[in-house]
Image 1: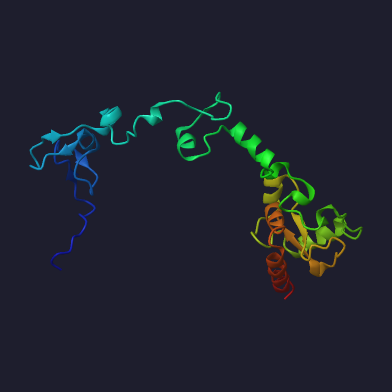
Image 2: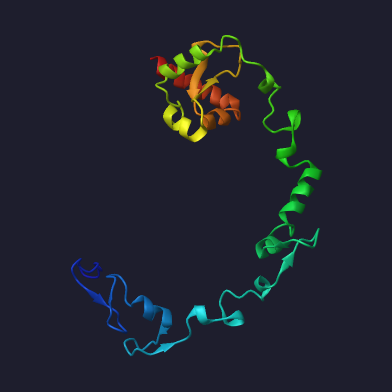
Length: 216
């Protein structure tokens, strides 16, 4: 149909409009000529105007921003450690050390929170001991039932040994460590087991439905 533009055939060769060097079929100029500058409006004359951006320095460069990126910027607290322009311009204007000290002082640094103050704390259940019924034999039977795969991401036990250096884990669906019924246990990798500690109501329903499918 008229007006439609089709790409050139696979076997058709194309050449640079300036130096006649063979080029990629969808280009108009070779890489070397394209870098020299912009073509003069009188296309085909081979005359260029402007300069290649690489050779433009300081105020002549399109990326120039009042010379601030060329200056050295220091932390506003210790005034010793040098910081990146982005941190100085858009961030807290502090080095990593001073920023960490500030967050510890304000109590917003999770790495130093323990017990009830930690974001993953749930009624102290993490400190409860496992039941004596939660034996190696029981865990092995659950792994065998689940085909030695994580029932969320499908990581195999062989992969788990390589990545985490230990056997694939067994998760208590209702988060009750004393409930070691097979209907309450499911095979998960370390990563998925940790994820299940957040938004517990969602994961409780999710793994209950998974277990129903396994037992069908």
